Length: 368
Ligand SMILES: *Cc1c(COP(=O)(O)O)cnc(C)c1O
Image (tube, rainbow, N blue to C red):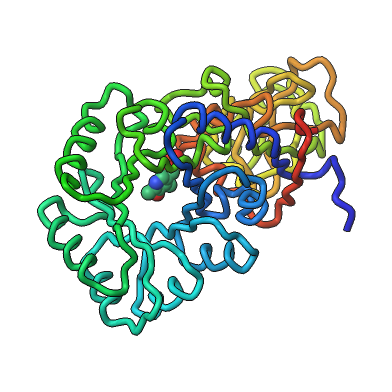
């Protein structure tokens, strides 16, 4: 089937991705870059993004299957699986595919020791410094590190990592506290260190260590709370979600639009129906007035988001025709603005674009 320019689609601007990757290097010039491409590269396509990010030093994914997929596609760089082994059988798969494993809990050391590995694997010991999600407790670091070191199944030295809970908030005291606790916990240990995600590497320079772990900034999302000035950091949107106008109607004063009739025209209005809905990953909870971009002009959402369509009030726009292209987020319309109107974050919107939406990869600088 020919993919028509005019249908609901996502364009992935690889030139923007390269720009954002360069910004990571600029912000953390002394660190190696572990590009985080979990969740299908935040919805951008795991293999396409891995291939395009050929200048990074390695990749991080959340699940073992994602790591195996990268290896099967021929990726030779470091691949770190952020959850590590979740069953005893996993250990052999890590070894077979030469994947690095995060060790965040005692049971994982047991799985390692119970395995029949002949080839040691690289482990990153994750330390809980306050996120309280994954990571060994501060008082267990020395013990777990010792037992990993004694295991013949581990390649030495063991790498050391933690994850920041509040790096997106420059006013929070939590980050400095976490870095301090990390430094105390790893004192005397020689392995390479990694602390920062996107917000961490931009906002908290002293936490840049041997490896930085950017995710959202690679895709052009602003990692800071309430920040939608991506241009200020120099980030460029990689993903643009587009659709088209599929119907136009005049709605008289007093008539309502969409399921539940939640929006009623206060005056005679021109309403455009756009062929995108929550079945594509457009957020169902987007508030009235959430902007879309039609012919470089903003129009606001009216009524409820349907599975396959949304309605916008285009009364104030100059000209709108059937088949006009509409940008839902991305180039020209910050995804953070849509996220804010939907009480979520850019990450959620990016990951949420469903499989039925074709991804079109564009290499040239203007992403066209
Ligand atoms: C997802 C994740 C990252 C990347 O975070 P961003 O905010 O997207 O930069 C880094 N480290 C870990 C452990 C993660 O889970």
